[in-house]
Image 1 (cartoon, rainbow, N blue to C red):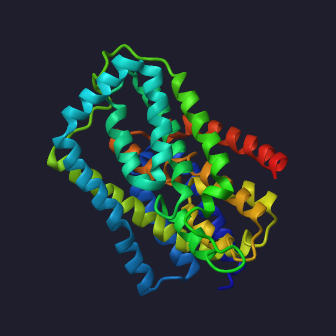
Image 2 (cartoon, rainbow, N blue to C red):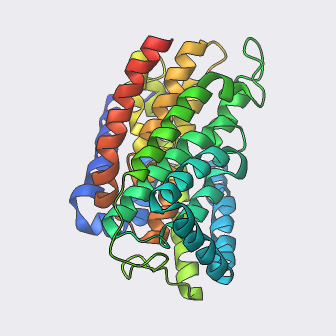
Length: 350
């Protein structure tokens, strides 16, 4: 649909607000799920794209993620002690640095097979068992979520981004199959995961004993806490569905016909907007292999910079009580540096 100048202006202001307000207004940061839901409803209303299929999608799409979070909450509640013993043994046997390196790398590499959701749930459970103060723990979570976000894109199983790309390119001339994304971005993703692992290994231990839970990150495992956290994740994902569809006409109007260099940097809006939505707009059968690589790397790198950018971010931030300012403090500069570095690397290699 064609947007008027007024609609474009309103959606532009809304998008800026989604970036800025969680970082500058404490009430917004404390109630991020409700804020994003209101932004999603506003975006859909401005774009005039309300429909029953959209309402159904907003209600149904979060169900799988929410169920995974709910079931995992009960499972980890039951099997927390064995997991804690395994983590303690790993720290005792190979040391904290190697343990953190392996956590980040292994979860990143297997996320394309076990899904980003499961990888994030495991991360949220294990990370509180490490002898780290809160600041270092948040840094480790950010690094691991970058790693999971990169690794999950390699197959159609890991996350919706890979599913959409492979589906849209399954015909001629690309004939995308299961290993298509591994062939195109596998080496770049592997480099990114290893880099996150190395940075994780450089984090310093806190004053807690191995396996001891820091009081500010201890998860409340009561039934009420699990249900409340599950409800927040459901509302968060619903908000992103509405926000993505509400901004889709705006994205079609403004970014769909830009060159790969422009798209690479403009795709940084993936920090707050579902990257699968952008991929659905930008990926067409006519896209070149070079442009596809630029597009995918920009989406997966920028997705780690803010909490709404990726499902692993949302899950870990919810379970560990990480606020938007904390996340941005540790992720924005890292994400920007990685985007700049890979931009140069892609130009050299491709």
